[in-house]
Image (cartoon, rainbow, N blue to C red):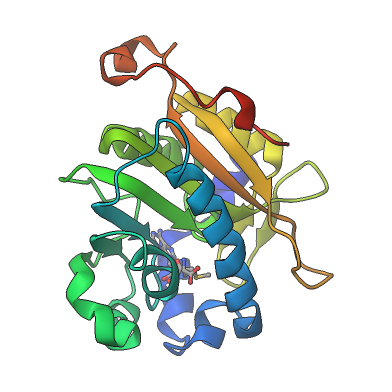
Length: 242
Ligand SMILES: C[S@@+](CC[C@H](N)C(=O)[O-])C[C@H]1O[C@@H](n2cnc3c(N)ncnc32)[C@H](O)[C@@H]1O
């Protein structure tokens, strides 16, 4: 996995995003038109999590690598009382409130930070990470996910929605200094982070020619000794869907 780390420069990624306009098309790399399909797929996934036997609460969520607040606005605010966001690009984070518009009173803390620097100080019901983890080096990603794991409220869930490669190995993008990992690499990272999948879904209805996109719902792994005190009995049995 060392090739992943060698391909990522945090400064280069921030320089790339600094040049991108604060629009839907900007944050989606020219694919603004897929936003609604993406949100519809995420809604189904989130609803199935929220209606499970051990569902998370609906008080506080966080949108990590939030861009202009696309997910905050159309997915999280309709389902949670309050939504925090983390985003390193100043122009993007300064756009979130106006982009959200009418419901901006439901925006909580806005953290102008990169995820490798972010240490949550609150407990969250849902921690949503989408199209952002490819900017993190492996070790930083594992440390970040461990911090997220420790920041989950009772029955809280970490959601990851990311591109994955079909080739089975990671692929690099020199333009924005990111990597696309394989499914296997993600599974290994989840394991190293003391997380287990309770639900997995592939996004449907996306145009041809883009990477497959997977959604994972993760909870602390009860076999992880360090974390065993905060675990609840599992009743998510049936829902790993590969
Ligand atoms: C493809 S956009 C996705 C934005 C948002 N998640 C969405 O789906 O609309 C990637 C976002 O990740 C942010 N980003 C890049 N490197 C990051 C890092 N190390 N930590 C947190 N966010 C990062 C960029 O500034 C940008 O807002």
